Amino acid sequence: MKNKKSLLHSISAAPHIFWAVLFIVVPLIIVIFYAFTVQNPDGSYTFSFSNIASLPDYISIFGLSLELSVIATAVCLVVGYPLAYIMARSKPKTQKILVMLLMLPMWTNLLIRTYSLMAILDNNGILNQLLGTSFQIVGTKGAVIFGMVYDFLPYMVLPIYTCLSKIDKYMWEAAADLGCDTPKTLVKVILPLSRSGIISGVTMVLVPSIRTFSISQKLGGGTFELIGDTIERQFVTGALNVGAAISLVMMVLILISLTIMNKFGDSEDGGIIV
Amino acid sequence: MKKYASIIYISLIFAVLYIPIATVILFSFNSENNTAEFMGFSLRWYIELFRSEDAWIALRNTIILAVSSSLLATVIGTAAAEGIYRMRSKLVKTAITSVTNIPMMNPDIVTGMSMMLFFAAIMGIFAIRDYNSIGFLAMLISHTTFCLPYVILSVLPRINELGNSLSEAALDLGCTPIQAFFKVKLPNILPGVISGMVMAFTLSLDDFVISYFVGPTNFQTLPLLIYSMTKKTVKPDMYALSTIIIISVFILLFISNMRSFKKNPEPRKIKKKVGGAR
Image (cartoon, rainbow over all chains, first blue to last red; front, side):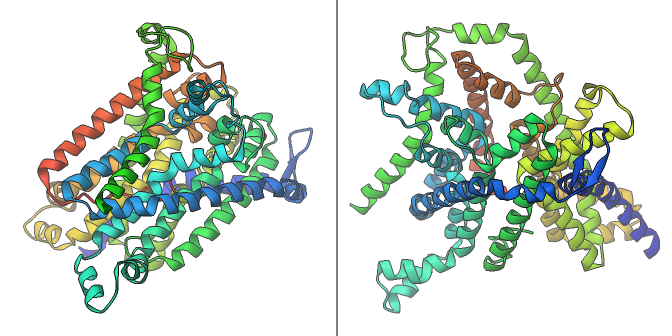
């Protein structure tokens, strides 16, 4: 009986294991294969480090992507934390409405949102038309950062809000009884308790901002390239081996940073599941 | 005083979040081909859109793909969650969940790239000349793959919570293991299964990056259509399409939230998309 049961159960996970190996592991192995080979004119592949060796050419792009996404993440945290805090402290019914309002833009396609932002900020866009000016906004770093903040802010607010709303309200009274004033309670009690929310929020903003390519294409006005754009360009021009090498490096970097973040967060429910 | 400050703060942020969306909706009704100045109200872009065959085909493709990939992911994912729950070796368990979560944490541009290279290799192995002939299959496989972790992640906690005693009781009372699963366990974990399926459906509906890499020329989805529209000169017809999508999402979300308003007065726990937006 026991044997029969466990056989049945191993069968129930089998399609998934098959699927995961074939469509997750094998494609990644192919990426690694591409990253370490060059294609000969006759169509065969030879092992080579030349793709990896060409990566230093892209270091400035990596740096720029990292710079813009870190700034965008910091802005999201600074703007988003108070919002999450206010949300968590409001009435239950208001909380629900606010969460819904925050989720609506999240469910709207990213391309549409980025595009609508471009229509406003463009040189002949709505903002300049309204003000009667011709500020150049699109094409600056600021515009790309603003686009990232605009697109990913809800991903920062929601985990922090979830975390804050779980904090017992008697925590405040306890802190007050023990002699903390409001700012001190915030810094010493509430902030540490919301750490796991902050960590998942930071991850959820940082990762998509690093890899984005539609935001920088639209709001960067084609003036500068981020790492996502570079991968896309290799794909369009058919330089698949170099593209695979860049993808591989990006993947390894992101997986490493996720693992590190995971160490700092509580793995229970606020953190990221790796 | 403090209360007003928070109201102003919230309003300011939501204004910034919603002004671009409102702009899209407003300018979709513009009577002229202009996306910066509002000339007058008209429905001409909607009429043009409804006459456009591309938009209808893309809509049909998007729905076919989202329905089939979310169903496939739900079936495979639910079975997998049950299997993972029963596994005794902790090592195997961790290995499987880690591999499953790769598409969720990996940058989607990398997932897209890896899928594209994979299908290129498949074409080489089976000597397939025309990518379009396996195009839909490739899209279906890719979408199912990135939806799977979300399904498993929403079903597995339910199975863990439910425990094993109910199905053991069913077995003692004479159910076959299959009956025990379908008659006892499945009804109990159904909320998790459904929320996983809904999540998979919306993710597939919304996906642009992976479809961009994998998509064949004969199977265009709405996000791909929008992207190709933004590559050309801006016309309000794209705004009209966006408005229709935005409004349908709003209505869907509103209905699903209304239901939860009535059901439980407690604030709903937010499901996180780990790794961020697709």
